[in-house]
Image 1 (cartoon, helix red, strand yellow):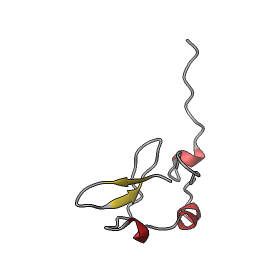
Image 2 (cartoon, one colour):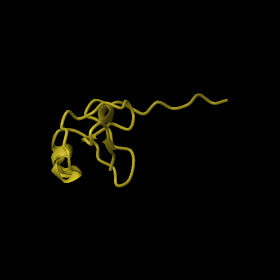
Image 3 (cartoon, helix red, strand yellow):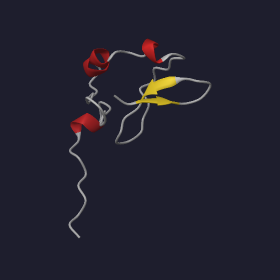
Length: 67
C-alpha cells in the first residue's frame, strides 16, 4: 500500500502513477481510510506497490516505446 509521509508528520494515500493525494490526511497512519474504503472510492489498491487513483485506474498504462 502506498501511504506517503508529507509534513509535520502527516500521512496520505498517493497514486503511484500521477502522484495525486487522496485528500485524506492523518497525523497517524492508522487514521487513514482503509484499503476497502479507498477501493469503494474507485481507487485500485495493490498488495505492496502500485496504488492508482480513480482516474488512473480507468486509464490504460503508458508503455515505453520499443527501443
